[in-house]
Length: 483
Image (cartoon, rainbow, N blue to C red; front, side, top):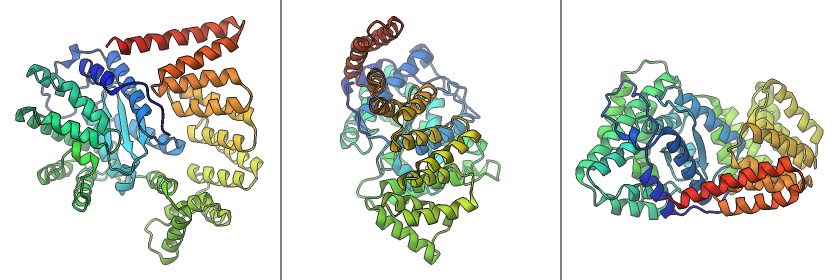
């Protein structure tokens, strides 16, 4: 979903240059190099910085709104965070719609991945290894320490460095790479050695996090080796390697570190493989051709995970409107895995597409009795209600989700659509204001709040709430302009 922009790169880089710390956390089994950055900015200021950075990215970057994929990433991130040494668990995740292999962490608990990481990490442990590495950058306050080091040496490029990283985070930005290259060229070699030390710290701490979270710590050197191999056949290395250079020595160090960890870690769950297959199907330019490929793999026995392949076949067939093939595949899967939510939701969507709206909603409602208020199930229910023309029901379901996920712009976007279809124009403007605010478009957020205020009429309680929101948005915009 491409979102309109408000924040400028210059404005953001200025604020980042002034307030660029990460939440302090005690290192796990690693020596502390010292940290004087806690006096630069408070944890709350840092959190606000991260939220502004997130709004900037949303305004400039196409993201994935798929509820099942977002939910998976959130669950994995919090699982790893419990073992990462991060003290402030107010984390925000985003999935960038790009096949380029990349992931990043930003001050304030922002974790982002490209869909390309799902495509390139063969198992969940490898995917988690990259995530654990990024979480280590946060727990060790590497961004803040980079800025602090630059300030100590009077290097006037700290803001430019971070601005370049912002550009690179937008999935394959040549402008960001060029800006970073020209900026780094002016920095002393000692600063570059300092950065390499941060990478070693993140590797070591990430391996510890992986092990404590129950994953095979050898996944860290494995994914690094995979990246190195793939880069040999590309004219340009993956984005991740441009910001996290991987050398043979670094791979050897990570392998030695992994060997010191307890054995018995897992390569990961089937959930990762299902989400990965889901993204392959959703991103396929020709779903019918992809379905044919998966059908051949099943028939010829070329797949090591037939249930995952069959799930992909069901999705691709559904997307190409081959409902008979999709139904056959899903019935086979549900006989073996009757409680698997990914398969339940896929079956419900298929039933809805076939006009079996009551059956589809009943299937989701049965699952919700077991998995109360589950985000992907609730979102799927709203989709099915919309397809069955129950716009009031879809609005109510999405309103419930907006209360549990108030910082998710996708929820507000679809809630506004449902409210419009249900004739709730006042609610539509309020929801659009929330969407635009979370997406960094403050001017449009203000416009929709002003529309909502006019429609509120003599409802003084509602008018007061809208005026309070307007005041907050104005104050936020002024804060940005004055920094």
